[in-house]
Image (cartoon, rainbow, N blue to C red; front, side, top):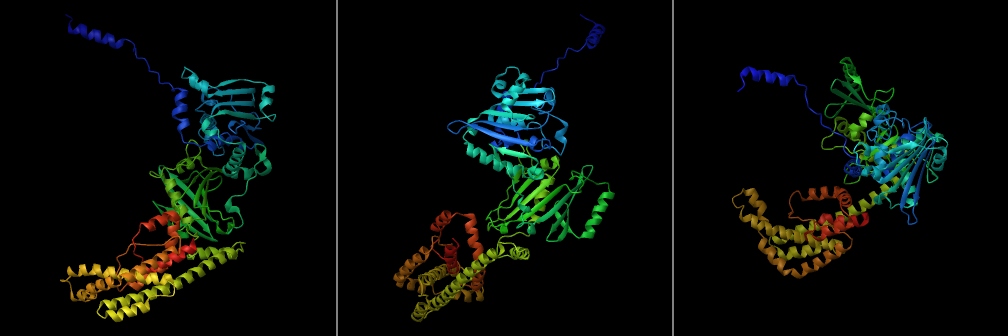
Amino acid sequence: MSSPNSQIVTARALEAQPSVYTRPRIGTGHFKDYVKKTVRVNGSRFMENIFETLDYPLNNPDVKNVSITSIHSDDSKLFEITVSDDKRNGFDDIDEELSRNPFNINHNRKGHADNNETSQFGGGLKNGAISIANRMEVFTKSKGGYRKVDYDITAMITERDNAKSFDPLIKESNIEEYNEFHPWGEGSTIRIFDILPVYSNKSKEEFTRDIKKGISEIYKGLLLNRGNDIKVTVNEELIQVTPYIYDLPSVIPFNSYIEMSMMEKADKTFLYAIKKYNRKEEYFIYEHRWEKIKKRAFENKIKDMIELGYEYKKTFTDKKYCIKIISSYTEFLGKGELTKNMKYILRNGRLYGKIPEELSRNGSDNYTCTYVHTESKDLVVDIGLTHYKTIRPDKENPTLIYEALMQIIDINTKPFNSDCSTLANEKLVKIAEENELPNVTEYRSKVENSKRKKYKKKTNTKNITNTVIDAEEEVETRLNGNSETAEAAADAAAPVTTPATTAAAAAAEKAVAKAVEAAAKAEEEAKTKSNDEEDANSEEDANGTAKADGEEDANDTAKADDEEEVLNSRSDISVKVKTTRRAVKGYDRLIEKTEKEMWTFIAELRCKYTDAEIQEKIANASDSVIPELAKAIEVFENFS
């Protein structure tokens, strides 16, 4: 048995021994998992992946020529895509190792933090190729000589060694091989082939059309800035870009500008904005929401923030603002082009994405659009930039910048309204007239024709409505006892000039009869109410008489129902709504209010439903027809 002292010595001896702990290996996983679980399930689209090959050359001032070509099989299947440029020294750092090499999945270099470059995350070219094909080859003339990169995705997936699975084959090439695939004496050519089946169903014509359109839209700002300094072709067809829509003569008078600035101190952020529209300036500061303030108070606020140590951040070069917003109104463009309140997010002339907005039900913002410009890579991330250069904001958990941006855009687009019945639209028309825009006369004529038709239908409906009211009054008289006289008066008052007026009167009589019957039941439960209420309900005591008259006039009612069907058949769409309304004191006001809202009602139907859907809803509606809505039948017929 060992003594306590010997146990202490043994413990101390063990403590003195060197550690035998072995550090576990972590590794990077296998290329196969990266391809199948990350890249090919990221939701990126075909076009977006093609443009990953263009970001660097189109933004490089040394590049003067860019060529995109495609090879298709006899059955119009896309087999190969080739992108070539004439950048001197080709791919930088192609002989470097690990993350410094441009073909490393986690490539990292100083340019990724430079706002003057498009590349930001370092994986664009590789991820783009992996997403659409099984193989990529690159031929380049670098500082070290000619190089060929074989990015064989299938072979890399089957490589057993995890670390080696991420390594493409890079080897020396020669001028003969280089010239075989590359059209110029400098630069690089990227061949992407063995296209995945899901992307191969594109003919040469479709590919050429889609890529030209995409480049013209995505790189519009870059190419406009370069002008004739660069030549870009798709299957030998030259790309020519048009100006931004807000730079067109018919749009410029309506442009509304906002310069948004950011100031920071430690973890605190202060935002302010200056709006310029129609030769006026307005000033806003942001504290959970934008607040408009007067110029002197605004200037004092900025001065105070500077004195407190706040500094401007993420600004344009030599400017104080970090975001420039241009909102436009395009109805007088003359192309019938709906811009649908779209918001375009751009950085240095490169379009990163669009943020669509839910449109108004009456289409009042159909001709509104907004362009958001910035130079900061950090800001486009705050707005919602993904690793695949698309904008997908998290609307459930918005960043400060995104929330403030959406609010200030709403302020900037407030003057724009294409509803010709509004004062805002009238102001836009006056701006168009002041600037002698070519399409304003045509627009005025269209609006006046619309108003004349509206007035004509309104006049006809008023005649119908007044006749219906007279008929209802006569029916009430009949219900109060003088049935023979009332019946004759009601027959005399009923509109007989057209099927529409006859049907409307018949429908009104039916509605009153139903209301009286319902009121009789209510009257039994209301005997304990005030004398005023009893007097009001006394008119409804003639329920039995009305019911008897209704039975006697069954044939007339059936005839009226037939005429009502004729009325509804006058248009492809008849408007029926459920009602239990009685003829009460506020009835005239209800009619007036309904007529004022009728055009909005019609526009809302057209915006919300298709004609077929409206037809179905009407078929399932009540048989009751509110008389004043007879206008909707004729208006909708003309509106369609």
